[in-house]
Image (tube, rainbow, N blue to C red; front, side, top):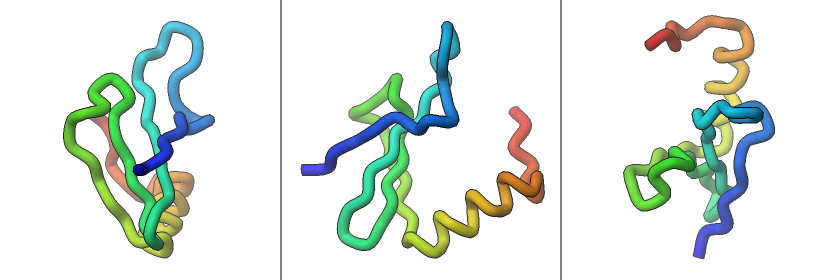
Length: 64
């Protein structure tokens, strides 16, 4: 069983854009909190750390 937690950097107030994270088996799992039974992404821990680093540096085009 995976234990999910909401990211402290998403949502808040009336913002429903929340991401949930879970760590299990050397991976970081990511899902949309509005669709807990929907798709999930799995990253190796190093790959997830690199993703966060690049997002913080604005290296990624994350616009809708």
